[in-house]
Length: 302
Ligand code: KMH
Ligand code: ZN
Image 1 (tube, helix red, strand yellow):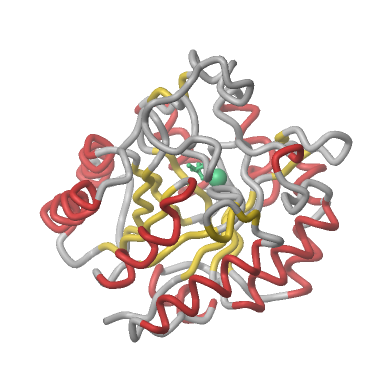
Image 2 (cartoon, rainbow, N blue to C red):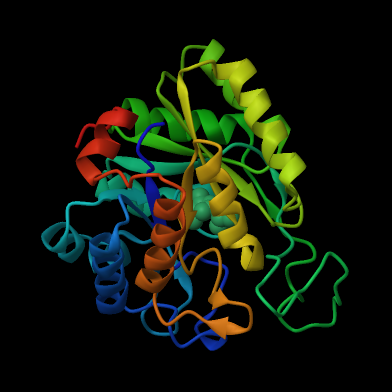
């Protein structure tokens, strides 16, 4: 089996600082937690920016540049900037920072979808939920817009014009079909790095059957020319990481996706989750890829 590419998604745009004291939102804390995660074994850092005044998601160049130079100095992990930003933002706002920062990698969400909530840790314990829960109010009418035109625009501006390669975020089977469509149009070449996303209401439920089906479809669409990674939001995070590792895939953890380290216990840092998943996947016999090995596997410009 290939070495395992471990991505850490450091802060995201879903969780709020009021949910966990460990969630980083100042430039210093985002940089420190990212560097610590890299030293703990993360080959890729998936990064969003935040406004340090209140922790609100931000995509401005200023907020990205608050932490990117420190991260580049402190570690050699692959920097992967979100082009998803926050689902509440229009595309031009989401792209403002990544266009200026010119990362070697960025995310690309492969379809428009409802983005209702995370299956969050212990707040939400199954698919029945209470819309009166304060966390959920405001997410019950949220559309995450990623039309074919949006996708083509990101491929052109970030890929063709700036040389980034992509973490293709696939929340459902149709997103693989969309990706194959762009590959057939000649706008995407391999090796393709798929991120299967579980646990967002509006995307796939965190069920093992969905993971095996996504893998089967990816084999049909992309043959040997792809790698897959798995993230599961909320309390399924470590189970799905372990399943992915056993299936020859790669894994993503981090406080963007889940705030806990075990049931009912908040993680104290991103690095703590990286260390935990590293122990799990090494226990299965998988070796973690260094950033240089990840760059070679994914065809990154470095
Ligand atoms: N928040 C994750 C479910 C992005 O940043 O482009 C997906 C994500 C999207 O990471
Ligand atoms: Zn993200």
